[in-house]
Structures are given as C-alpha cells and as structure tokens.
Image (cartoon, rainbow, N blue to C red; front, side, top):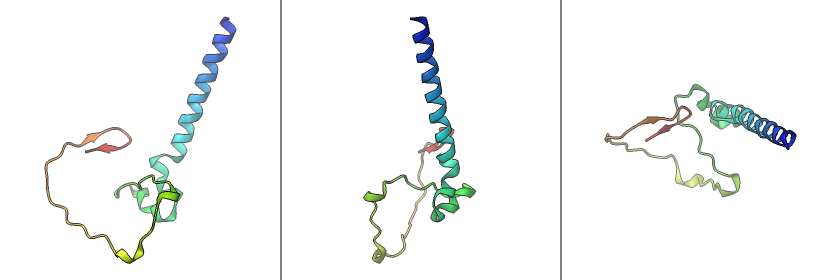
Length: 86
C-alpha cells in the first residue's frame, strides 16, 4: 500500500512539472515568437494576442483599420504576476 501511494505521488509530481514546463515554453513570455504578426509582444509594450481558436476567427478586411477613441476613466489595476486585471 505504501509503495502504491509513493508511486502515485511521484506520478502527480511529474505531471505537474511537465505541465509547468510546457506552460513556460509557450506562455505569455513567448507569444511574440509563435506568430510573425505577434512579434510586437516581444517588447511587452503592446497588448498580448487574444487566444482564439483558428476555426472561430474570421478576417473581415473590408472593415478597414480600427479607430480608437479612448477617454480617461477611473479603474483598479491588479498585477496577477503573469497578467494585469482591470
């Protein structure tokens, strides 16, 4: 019984380490390396790409460039360590 518990714990630890390693290799710090269009993310001065599945994305080129009209407003900004939450 103790041997089975030991192996179970070792297996869980190995799975967690593997998941964390994969997350570090493809996480936000590397988004600028995934697609050429995302290379601005390498400088970390622009917003990260939104993680949408390819089959759900539709490019509508006739709409033209996005026009922004931001106005100042109050907000709370929280640093989550890997992202910012407004």
